[in-house]
Image 1 (cartoon, one colour):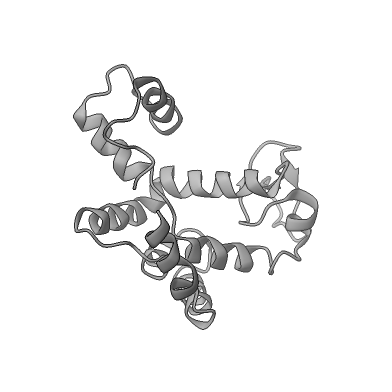
Image 2 (tube, rainbow, N blue to C red):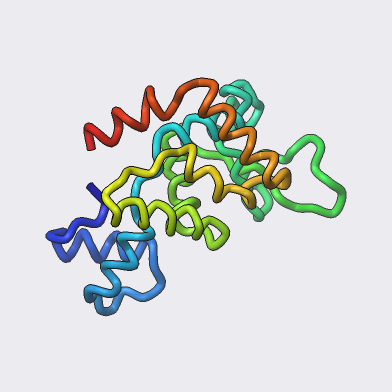
Length: 178
């Protein structure tokens, strides 16, 4: 089941469109199709592995003081916590959230809208069209731009998913219950 269903009430569909798209004057089938690609779930194994990795299993300063479990940055002064070892001349902060739930929501929104994560969305949509459920392990391949470490970061996330058997423990159950 997708977040955007075929029989979605018009007002709910318009609200989803306004959150995830720039053009919502007319929500025709083409717009609905593009929203179906953009607004969908992220498998739990990927969320868990990235959250554990980015927050040092919930022990990082950013997780404890800012409820930021995914290392998301912001760029206006005072929007978050200043990294202690921030490179000279850079102005980013690590975004502060009111709650862990807000952090998870922003992370999912980021993967569902960020230009650099379009390959994740395409792979996920392709799997859904073919009647299969994408795993976090497979989608992790699209995270090369999430970290400066690129492919090494992807290898680490995939390793965490494999080692902790997150697909079997969480994704498989998630898709059965969805």
